[in-house]
Length: 368
Image (tube, rainbow, N blue to C red):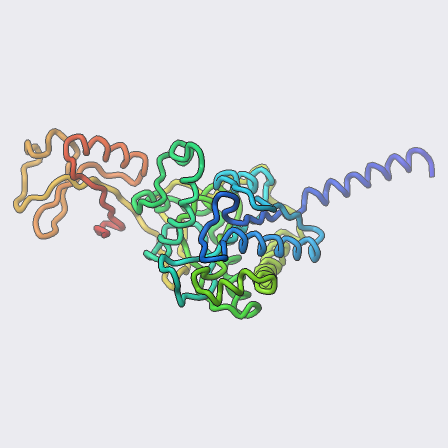
């Protein structure tokens, strides 16, 4: 072979390698908690150990069976990792999928609750879902400067979760599809009780720029389930179920991409959380339909059993002031769908009305 042929061969070789690397599917597996953060624990069972065991098993299955998939872990041992840093690992890797693995618990010391569920990002539609998000998000209290880092977010305050009302997920449909595949596999492959796909405001999901899910493997305060999840056999079984859901998702992904050819440049991906007052599309989740909604926030400042004049001294100079009827006249200050604006108006109203509070209207109807 002449020099020209050798040169062309080398060029072709590196081009194939480059093309293969460009089309490589990247999955980031996040073992929740770690280090000084044990997560939920009951006796000898610790959530951080269960999460890591399943995460490593899952990664091993993917590496063994899918050579064209790159696996990245947020941790591979017992170390503490900030929530934001976990999402940053996925974003910097330009990952195609983010899987955060956790173990559930209730407040009771012992519980008969059992089963696995998978969450996607959004506003919690039930107190149970909110409680799960609060427990998982409370890890930020162990981080340095968490108040500044998370812009004053209080994981234990239900009011803080109002921000998730404004977050629609660019990858909601893919996340929902993947979550559904995982839940099917939990039921058919791992023979676990299917608790369904749910939605809640998890900080670790809000910063990711790809389809993302958070899995709750089961209940650590159920002694039978805790023993199963802490065993090698149990962790292998749960990892195999997640892998089964992942492989189905990957096949769908490849089909849509045209045998793995990426049609959208990776560097053009945008974060999945977009501030808006409207849910972009209708989806089925938590056995209910989430419809397109128009959200409005106001500050309630006072109540009167009779209608007041628009320039009443009782408003203490606040404007604009409106009212709605509910066993009398309830007066409100401001109207916006912007969370930062309502926070600004609330701080101003509190200087004049110490008992002022935020209220929400959806499609013109006052929500409790």
